[in-house]
Image 1 (spheres, rainbow, N blue to C red):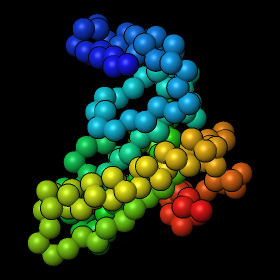
Image 2 (spheres, rainbow, N blue to C red):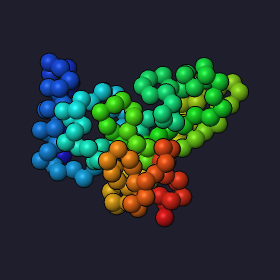
Image 3 (spheres, one colour):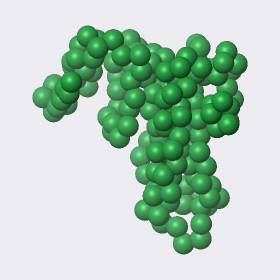
Length: 164
């Protein structure tokens, strides 16, 4: 089944988020995986799905929430960049990390070359994190992410631990 909702057909974010909720509820999803979903969601959408809503962000959160992450990392002179899979909470890109992947920043990198390397890592780690959530090994407990009932550090799980 495919559903398409055009946010421009709604008067505001809350109205769109209400319609999105109503469209998803009949499916009773175990997990909602955001990928390339470049809209800020309101509590109207986030609250009912708390703990079942994940996103991937192209930075090592909490560094560089929002847009232009690669340019910001380069401008700051960072030595590495990366991606973070995290639970979605009401604050933008502030949910507890599930997993991160790191890539070195190389001399001569520009936002495009860095983005390409980060995106390869995103494609690799997102399925690992999603599987860990769906298996019940990773969950949101209060305001922290847990793996096998152990609170994860701010940077999320070690990849090897998720692969077990």
